[in-house]
Length: 77
Image (cartoon, rainbow, N blue to C red):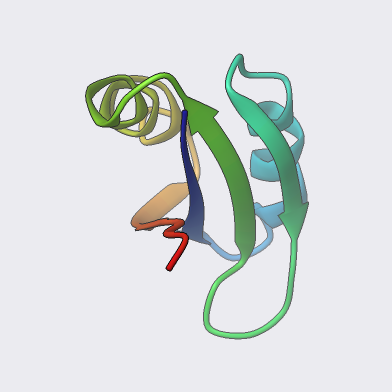
């Protein structure tokens, strides 16, 4: 299982709408709108890196109102 945080920047005023839309996606365990340099933080999981990439590129990045994403895979050291 691969887990990651996805940091999202949105258009002005779209954070809550984007977080609500993403929270219903398969593989997303948490989606919250926040303050700071990013507008939404998502925690997601997938069976492997390829499936995580598909979630980010094919589903999350296609949500209207998103301007940029940064995917941060979780590592256990």
